[in-house]
Length: 155
Image 1: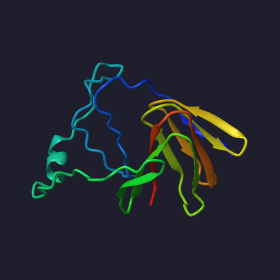
Image 2: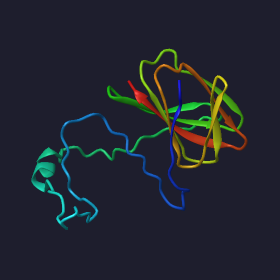
Image 3: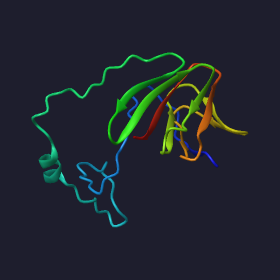
Image 4: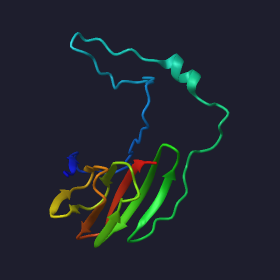
């Protein structure tokens, strides 16, 4: 089974925002980055729908507290839709996905590493992601330097 690799560009400085979405048939577009179609028209925006869908009574900050573990996984979010963990390693880390019935996405947020499945190895650079199919049950993360990955899968 193949590993699927997606490339981005090197991180500059500042914040990294990783948007994790659940499947939905609804999109309320509140800003479209001034993009236009071939005729110069912007796409429809949905301000009224977006405003009506917001919960103005929720006064929580949304901030999630966690303490990262060295050389292992740290759970950040676990909900009915998906799980998100941070993985830290500076050597080789074996991951067992045999209890999952989901693909796994790994996003490298720090130093480059390699992902190995059997005899197959793929290099994963900073801000690149890889899709691990649900049929792969064991992989290795091989790091030459301390690296950090975001791990996401369906609950």
